[in-house]
Length: 130
Ligand code: HEM
Image (cartoon, rainbow, N blue to C red; front, side, top):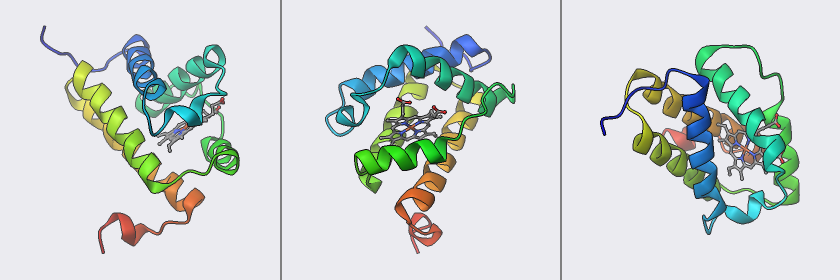
């Protein structure tokens, strides 16, 4: 079956659902998500990504603060973020193709970098390989 681009909320729901199925069985990351209440968390993620891609304005949380708290409970490392991004990209590549699919991967990567700068204190040069 040929792949289409991401154009609707329902397409993003698919991305999030498949992504977390991967997270839940991932050796490196699954333990960081054991306390997550999925029924509550999934709709938040749908809103978050819909806002990122389609500027719907329906997410007004604070992911940086949330991850700061999560980091204090279970220390995050650069390798965790690398794996998170890898699984996210893998999910999108399996399901979709096109401009929005590329944009979503790009946005996720950028947010992951900003999170690492803020939470882990890794500076920008490290991501640029300098
Ligand atoms: C090491 C990588 C990561 C880990 C271990 C992680 C883990 C978590 C956990 C445990 C939560 C809390 C879920 C809950 O409320 O129960 C969360 C929420 C969230 N994460 Fe991550 N995360 C990671 C990377 C990212 C990245 C790169 C993004 C965005 C590109 C992201 C976006 C979000 C958002 C939007 C929320 C919801 C915040 C809210 O409730 O408003 N996460 N994450």
